[in-house]
Amino acid sequence: MEVEEIYKHQEVKMQAPAFKDKKRGISAKNQDAHDPDYENITLAFRNQDHAKGGHSRPTSQVPAQGRPPSDSTQVPRWLYRAILSLYILLALAFVLCIILSAFIMMKNAEMSKQLLGFKTELWNVSNSMQACEERQSEVWKSVQGNITMVRSKVEKLEMQLADIRKVDMKVQKILELLQKPQSPPQ
Image (cartoon, rainbow, N blue to C red; front, side, top):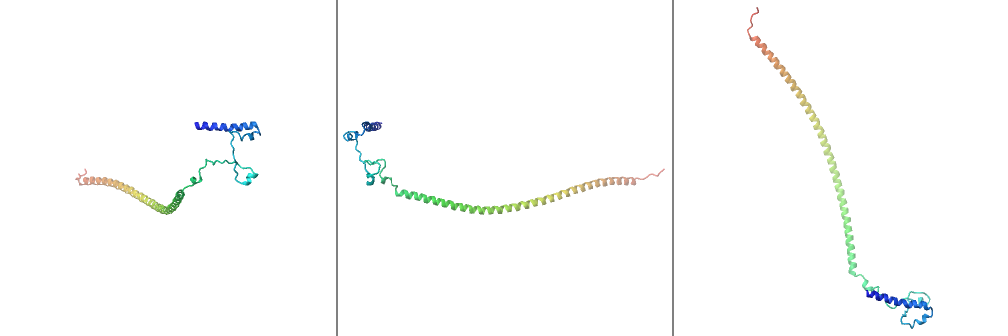
C-alpha cells in the first residue's frame, strides 16, 4: 500500500514541472537546465543516419527490467529430447493402432466367411428339417387314415359279431325246438 502511494506521489511530482513548462512557453526551455525538478534525458540512436535526419524512438540509458536475460529463457536440451521421445511414442502408438486395425479387418473377413458358411449350413439343415417334417406329417396322416380305417373295420366286425350272435341264438332255439319230442297233430 505504501509503495503505491509513493509511486503515485512521484508521478504527480514529475507531472508538475511539465505542466509549468506549458504555462511558461518557449522561454522555459533555458530555465529548465537550472531547475532541480528537471531531468536531463539523453537520446541514443541505433543508426547514425537516423540521428542526422530521421525521427527515431528515444531510448533511455537505463536497461529495461521487464525482460530477463536471454540465457534464462532457453529451453534445456533434455526437454527437447523428452518431447521428441513422446512424439516417437505417439507415432509408435499410431502405427500399432494401424497394425491392430488391419489385423482386426483380416479377422473380420475370415469370420464373415465362416459366418456365411454357417449360414448356408443352417439353411441346409433348416430345409432338411422342413422336408423331414413334411414327410413325417404325410406319414402321420397316412397312419391316422389307417387307424380310422381299422376302427371302422373293427366296428363292422363288432356289428357282424353281434349279428352272428343273434343268428347263433336263433339257431340254438331252433335246435332246442327240434330236439323236443313233438306231439302228434290232432
